[in-house]
Amino acid sequence: MGTLGIASEKGTIPVRQNLFEKDNSGQAVLIGSRCEKCGNVFFPQKAYCDRCNAGDLIPIRFGRYGRIQTFTIIRQASPEFKVPYAIGRVDVDEGVRIFTQLLADDLGKIEVGQPVELVLDRLFDEPNGTEITGYKYRVVRRQK
Ligand SMILES: [Zn+2]
Image (cartoon, rainbow, N blue to C red):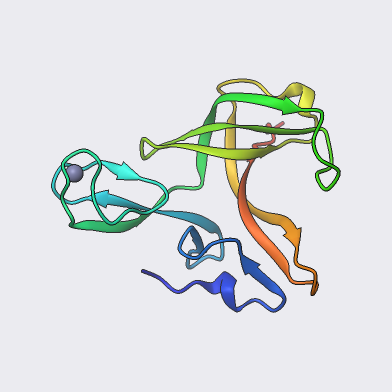
């Protein structure tokens, strides 16, 4: 397990430990686990493999990119959530499907199959002002 650089940033803490960290270049990466016995990959990390019951799982970092498998736009929510926003599932290269909030400049242009990249973003603030950070995926802007 690498160091959780995010945890040490002042006034910002991750929503849960061991979900994500920053790699050596300062980019956010998710942390999953891979079964040494059968090769199955999980996110979030697990202690035992669902497929073969082995207990020898090792932590792995996922790449930062994936593709939208499905999504929906939320237009009504309780008052603490600003609408509209998009949620969906992202397929990452390691073969895992991740449920996440999706970010885009224009929510109306989100499409299935679009490439997305991992970002760390504010989820909510604690009453004492501490910002709670989580992972989201943002649509990759097209190169001109
Ligand atoms: Zn296994």
